[in-house]
Image (tube, rainbow, N blue to C red; front, side, top):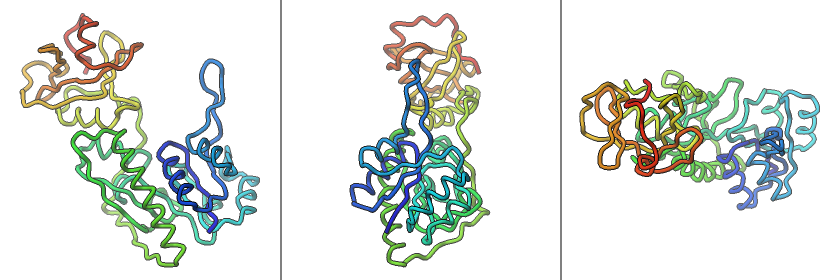
Length: 307
């Protein structure tokens, strides 16, 4: 079975490496064009391209997925199936090429959390469980018929980084199971129930800003869902103040939301209901450090974060 793999970030790269390690026949990789980064404008490759280069797999990097040259290149490969992980929306001209079709690995139990950031939103919304889905591509995003699903529990101390890594590991195994089923012609699909759908839109800077007049639990979950990148943030003395880790308390808030209290080398912040403890932070222009170390080197001129 000749496979073309479509993907870009670390999540996709982990899955690609798993397929290579298991000796699947990856005949080409499709990923985003290179970017110029830094002062020297050096070329930056996607994580998926790095894996493909190391394994000597041919790479396609189209600017436009409907480009006639790109589509003709894909057709000339004569591949059987396409595997898509964390990539752009594919047009019908592309996903209809292989005779066995294309399937996508999505980081949720579809139809929940359709969209660009399913892992983040599961954490932000305080879910106790999430999962992964392989589904056949259709014209609309994340609505194709489901092939396989696998549930994953979300631990209390999980953040985006830890949950991402767990899901990438489980997801790569789910891709292998799906490929094996398709190769044997042993696939039965399930239509998604659109009435149970929810969205997981792209994470924006506005979403990352903490609103201290929210509940302590919702703020804590926002911090978890965005850590370590892009990170939830607030403002202190007109500077961005990122928060990577927090913990909840049973102490009721007794001051205006956003009010800071320093006690026993800890940073407490009042919210709409209870006080929350900040554990790992980063002031704009500085390094990420433990909150207790931050207290030693910084003097708060104001006593509250902006709400």
